[in-house]
Length: 204
Image (cartoon, rainbow, N blue to C red; front, side, top):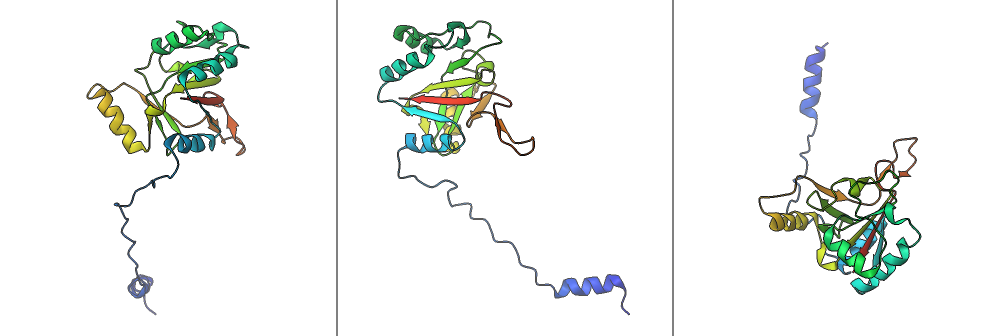
């Protein structure tokens, strides 16, 4: 009887070893969409429990925002970005500058660096006024953005942010894709586990 080692080696010699196929690195990961970038972004964000409202103009957006915030206490609506603050004030939208973020904050209103159509993500950074807390602490995060800020893919996003800041990139870049969620507990999806329960993008 042949030793076990020899039997194993002979079996290995008889085995037909198939080499794995060489990956096609030239083919795109994402394919071109027939729909407009804002529609692609809306579909992809809403597929992960986010919400997108598209407006014909910035004025229409601000009117809707005024209606949305009317039932909330002004001190619990925080916006720290000067450009957005000016627009909110001029439109009569209730908000506070929140030099100290209240423990019972209800809504944060922020801008973003870019929106990624193919993943439904909002790219935000520490260069935006208000710091990182306004992206993750409030139960409702509302992002105001223009269609000009939409890019198609992550590759385009990285190129765009590099072009914007050059060698002086913000200390943190964060991609937000829908509300915070986890299914760690009994595989039940829970929203708002580690951040906002809702993410709403107002797009004009």
